[in-house]
Length: 206
Ligand SMILES: N[C@@H](CCC(=O)N[C@@H](CS)C(=O)NCC(=O)O)C(=O)O
Image 1: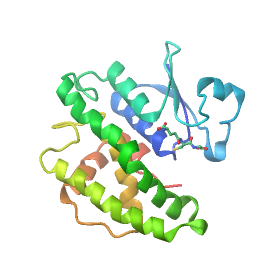
Image 2 (image 1 turned 135 degrees about the horizontal axis):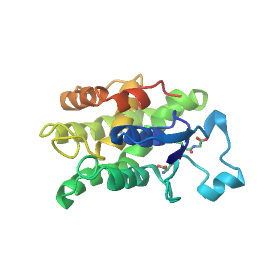
Image 3 (image 1 turned 180 degrees about the vertical axis):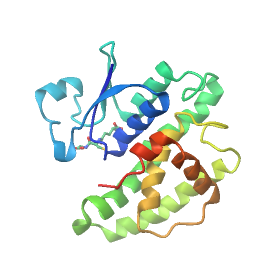
């Protein structure tokens, strides 16, 4: 049995919950972090030395942390030919967009999330305006990519859709001005039709 630690309101935990759902895997879920606390206990630090969520344990006892690495692990182990493209070129096409989330998209998304949701009282309005502008350009890149194909990795949903899909849901929920990005909107509609996305990602931000 798989066991997942982490509150479902975390975007990084949502990636794993959605992946588990796509793969049809049964799992036990322990909400942890945020209002649930528990990240500083020695028991949890033994599972994940970073004291962050998510953490996943597989039935073989193997431990996994870092959300994108967990999604890759689940895809490789349980989703060959579906979430995990078997062709290395196709896999690379999905994989690079997974890396692009923490390296490029993550920081301006964090600025808006904290400014609108987590700590509006201390929001840095200049930083938020800059993040809004930057995100319009970055999501424009995703829109251009999706002009040629329905999903991030090609013709069908792969692991490449998961981190970006979780973040686009948030971006569309921020009270900002967004450019018209029709391919991105059509992709979001395709994701919204998937039960795992609707269940775990289309939830109120907190
Ligand atoms: N790079 C890590 C980041 C993990 C992370 O920052 N998790 C946040 C939630 S999104 C966390 O544990 N925050 C403390 C808390 O929830 O109390 C990953 O992708 O797993």
